[in-house]
Image 1 (cartoon, helix red, strand yellow):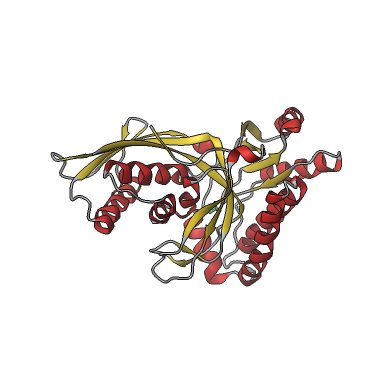
Image 2: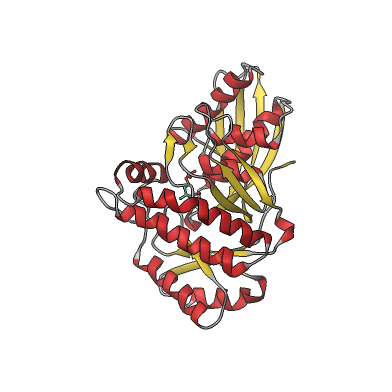
Length: 325
Ligand code: PMV
């Protein structure tokens, strides 16, 4: 009744932006990500007779409130769905995802939680099934079950039974790097959940976003297959800009960008003008992630660190899927 799992976070190159079902976390569009090796969560789940309710410790601290509720709701869902136990669990997580780096630790967190929980209950399920269950904890987490390049199929069923991630290419097949550019000022006012909802409900640009996805996906998968970095990078950057454009077309309009966000975007474009193959992507926050190839690591890091408002640069390789410890 005890298991430990490790899961990495991921960065979307084709963004998941908008839900068609809020409670089942069903997306409007397919998305595609790269799993990252330096940012991860390890979680131990132990089901115990003597517990009257679930317990959640994050980095040795007892967690209550909204964060606890999400974990307990997920465990309830697993107990209900699998009928494997009625016991409560102790969940102990350690996050190796600096909050300031602007990565949702919910992706690695829920992937590790789902993996450790199902293993503790001795359920023999496929990774695809595990990804589907993980999705109910946090949408983007369903991609963290797999390593390398991963696509989340939105599915068409109303009950979400065909909405899960699949691997497109394993991590070891292509050494693409990502620099997480940490800005000095990183307050984020609108959560991804709220941002998505407002955009779907009100943005005049949302239909254009949805229309652009199938072509982006087809092209980026071609690029990954052909190891064509220019193609993968330029599609990722354009897709990110289109996602952020939807927020400007919402009512009321909003943006996740700060002044330093724009400086980093312009810095990346300036590096490209100097012949360095480098591209950016940005999630629902101000921090920028920069894609490049190993041979450019030194120059990319140096140049990013010189941009005013950049606090830190954390580099990562492509990472593995869920593992059990
Ligand atoms: O899964 P959530 O609720 O953390 O939403 C993730 C949304 C984006 O990071 C902006 C895009 C993505 O596909 O990860």
